[in-house]
Image (tube, rainbow, N blue to C red):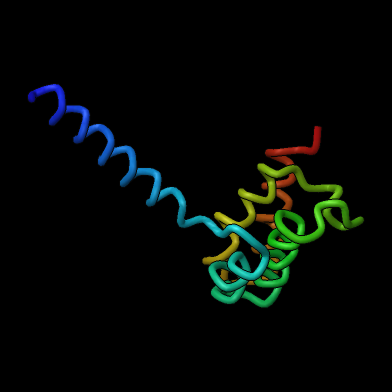
Length: 102
């Protein structure tokens, strides 16, 4: 009986962690709604839409070739609170340099 309870706790804990991690966008529309529409600067929103496009819609587009998947994740994670356009471009550059295309 004790092993059953322990197994149940492990399964429920794993399911809870998986559902919390599953909140990430699954397509372009979800990505734009969750992130790009909430960007604080105009250019931040534009760069966020680009990241969503490159991640979900058109990874092979010419403007997407300069971004690795990790760079796109970095942009999505860090562009939303940026209030000034020049800072948004700094975040884009930092993400691109930190996670270059291999």
